[in-house]
Length: 160
Image (cartoon, rainbow, N blue to C red):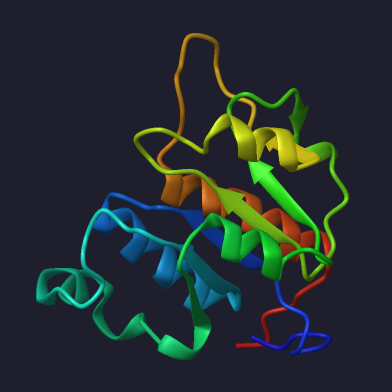
């Protein structure tokens, strides 16, 4: 993949992920589409577990993943960056939002989302519109949908 500026890349942040298969799929998506991954710990599983590594296969590159020891560490590090929270509780659709190439797209824990305090702190909140009476998409699918829109808007071109 050729990018306009390899230093500017979208970032996917996962808040305390608890399903290893989803995190593995997200690692693969980030690796294939050129995004960085940030994981806010604690995780509900061990990253070094051999079963997790088997699902991730050879897509896990430790250089593309940054770990945060907690949400406070993450928010302090991001104090001058734009964080966009993807949540079913938002009123604005991701399709009507103007993404910047170096945005951090924050996704909540599969079992519980993010705490109310994070909802209060983060200004930009977006949702993926869905059919009525449906709860939510799988987080790995949600990451792929929104990351693809960020890349489309910012004209990342695959010359592979």
